[in-house]
Image (cartoon, rainbow, N blue to C red; front, side, top):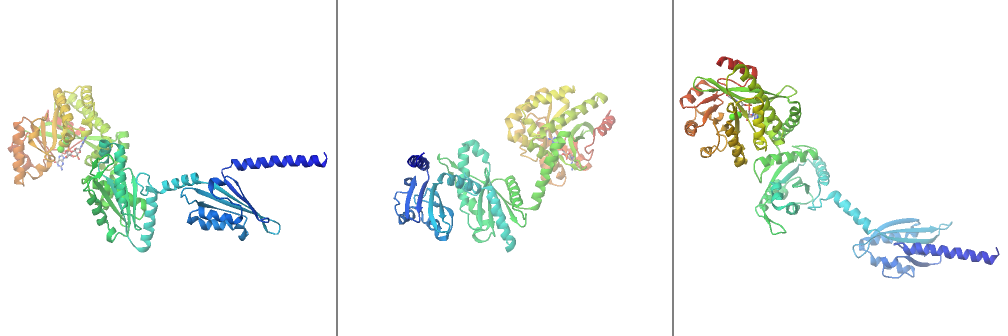
Length: 569
Ligand code: C2E
Ligand code: CA
Ligand code: CA
């Protein structure tokens, strides 16, 4: 190949390369500035117009960039543009344009010759707005709750930990308030979840007003908020905060659909260092006492108190053990005899459940039945009690042929089950027991929640001949007037009456009139918790039909009942 051919070939190659580079540049969405520092020339390449509306022909034209960026970006820009003056090879920074939206990553590269003289410089502008926004959103989500704009749970815990560290050094206290909307489920059910969210949002906005250097407000979860107050004194004292909250709650919140909603909240309060020194535990304590506040009604405040915590922990432990006990059917039954007052004839027995914990401790049904009712384990427990009592009673009946009345305590949850009647009838039939020998006890509280449904069920049970006994009479509403419509056969006068019937004139009058009226209605009366002969004699004199109590017998295991039955044969 001769020289001219070679030149032609090289030229063609060059052209092709240039085309390639130009294409690459033209299709790039970045913009470049190329500066030949030795020849003092400058040119822009690629997408310059996308970023800036001025031309760069001389180095001084670069000053136009200063006008195009936000004031905060000017310093970093100056640094990058004078990179070669510091002898640096490359650097980059993020700058923001004056439009307030566009974020640019600006990088600069300077090329030096062997004598360390800068020869070329390239600036590259890259639009990173999308990436930056996504990143900002992630950062936001890491700290804030989207719904309310308040701090989220995680960040709240971190800030609280900071308060506690400071308080440790300065010997301060830090207070955590756990705030929960009362009956939030009802709001959701009545108005829908969108309005529910709006309620959470609006209350959150109101609580946000407490924010300051020493007060952190967070949306903790669904309908709960946590406020941490560092050194709660003066205008940020807890009294003032709770008062401000309850003052606001006197007025309704106005929803976007014109709905007015009046809210109430329960507040639990725990303090560092009294309740705990750990942020998570402190929040936990505040939450636990908040639950206690709920049991006191609505719009209630409860301060941390060690017995509340130990009660709560005990209940949790009972609840956990209870699940295991149900699984292994780790219960037994005692039976307490009931006698007719005339002649002290054995009328029947009341079944009472017993639970011995794995470490040998007895746990009273007064403690665990309410927990079992809350977590639903009362259903299998109640079914077991029924099955076991009927099985035992059927055995006695077969051996001794002494008809009695077997009384069973039935929880509201059991009565509410759709197939309750079917279960009862099937169980009684399984053991071939007469319906008339079975008595189901019910407390007034069961009737309050669902009067119609329960009384309907009681009527059906009565039609079979099953007896119904109203337990603990006198502790609930005890209105004699509603007794009339109730399909009951027996009324059990609560122990609290019997305890004072001899010493308190009022109780005496009430007990006598209860017995008088109840007999008129045709029900049988049984006095519970009879402990002394005097009580017995008195109850006999006023016409009570039956007694149950330590005076005659404590609850006892099945084999001891057999001995009692033998005495009556
Ligand atoms: P209750 O139905 O009112 O049962 C009577 C309670 O009073 C029993 O307590 C009994 O041991 C106690 N008692 C009886 N006579 C006397 C007395 O003369 N003096 C004193 N101080 N106490 C007396 P217990 O066995 O601890 O049961 C407590 C409660 O637990 C029961 O009260 C009942 O509400 C509930 N319960 C017991 N077993 C069951 C069950 O199988 N199912 C359900 N749902 N509840 C049960
Ligand atoms: Ca009872
Ligand atoms: Ca009772």
